[in-house]
Image (tube, rainbow, N blue to C red; front, side, top):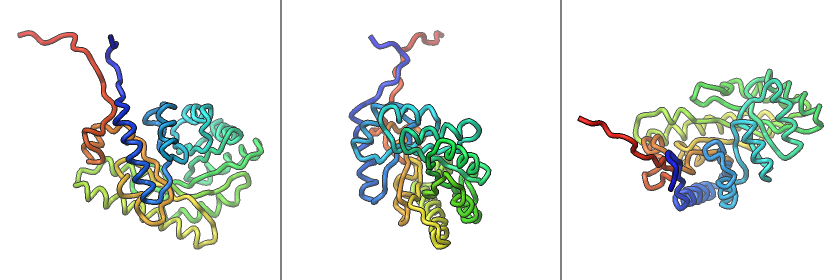
Length: 262
């Protein structure tokens, strides 16, 4: 008998979700780098890799370490490591390719120093704020930051990324949400074009969210998508019409232990 409460994964739905997203990104000509923080399961990551994921996105150093230890060596730590974590980011690159994010020169300098101390080249992506208002450099300042970052020994500027998390807070129609996703990606691509025009080569233009899976990655110039929640889906994705009920693959099984009496 199952001990409750318990999380139960519907494997058929899970695998269908993984295949559906992989097929959609392949059709769009965009690399798929799913966010690992949703599942935190190597078994799920293995299924995603088999379906065509080029690597994974992580939130925490523990997630990075778990994936590296499991043999996944092309990762993006979508965070800005500071303090001792700068050295940790550099040390990860002695085990694989682990890019990190940043949005200021103050974050970039210690990362460069840590990379030199570890004798590695640390890949970095500049985060651009395209509407979430949480982290990221404003678009008008991105070129200046890119110029500073490429001058730092030990770092390799690979591109730009955004998290269009503002889509999760919208209350309009699905088409209005898609329009917002496209607008955010257009803004990011525009920044990338400005940086390239200034003579700085960048190859990655990365977008990331499940609510924006059918809008932001479809904009010309985007090279990579980082959805995460799609593997299980949830009530929020249902509200946003990013999924359907029959695609929800995670259920909480519980037992009734009491009922109210009149």
